[in-house]
Amino acid sequence: MTIRTTTIRPGYVVIMRTGITGNVKYSKTILEADTEDADGSLKGRWETERVIANAAELKEATQLRSKMRATVTKTCAPISFGLLCPEDNYAALNQSVDEARALADEFNRRAATTRLSFEVVAGKIESDDVKAVRAINAEVRELLAAMEAGISKFDPKAIRDAADRARELGSMLSPEMAERVKDAIKVARSAATTIKKAGEQSAAEIDLLSIQKITAARTSFLDLDEATEVAAPIHEGRMLDLAPIEMEEVPAYENDIIRDSDGVPVTDAPEIDLGESLAPAAPAVQVPQFEMD
Image (cartoon, rainbow, N blue to C red; front, side, top):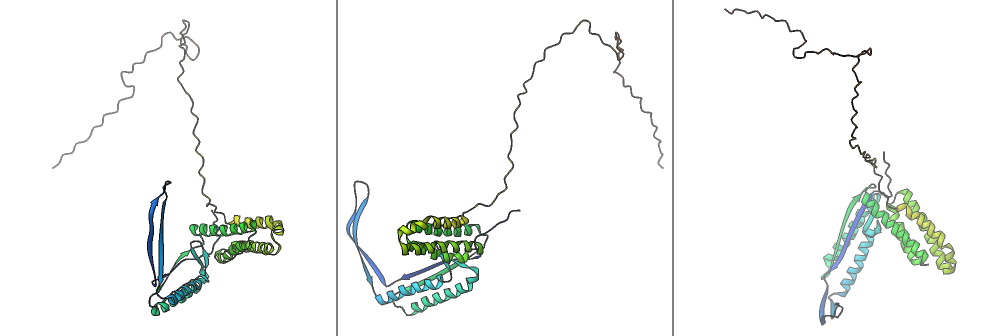
């Protein structure tokens, strides 16, 4: 029996798209047509003009777009390919989507030239979803690696940015894995604070130890393929060369004679006539005959 373990909790992958259309027009004027240089590259020049019909309306739309995204992302953990929402946050996710959509609808009803678009799609993932586990594990590994790189480069801002994203992603991890990430974040934040306060000379003393601790946490999220049954090896039998052996013909000796079981030479062996069967003949059976009236 194979025991399967997981690093994530069940939840939802959320894809959100927002957009602003209208109100802005672009015009392009070509100043120099594309010309090919000796190395095969193309070179050209043009001028782009942008005209905003209603600047105040565009500014409001841009601010509302940011607010709509923030309303949804506060219930999820941002990752490279979308958002992750734990299963127990699904009700809050639905509420935030309704609030963001209401903002877009209210603006579109009164706006004259600008339109806000807002779409959200959520897909359910289970804790044993292999593809989801690998994707989330890869995301965690990248964030932990970013913390390591930040410590190596004495960059407290990079450390804190990666730690903040890892903390948000921790809500999608199993309790055991979330605790490991939490410990790594604590180490990284401590290193960032020390780097900022003491400078690079003092930070170099904690560099190796901090990196080792974060690396240990990162190895917990390595992709390990599921164990598969190993087939027994097939051994090919060794071929034996059994070439025919020519036996030497043994010459008959003149004094070779046939003897019976008592050792007495047999001169004249009785001949057996196999022409007639030695088995007794079967008796004839007379079948009675009946007369029919």
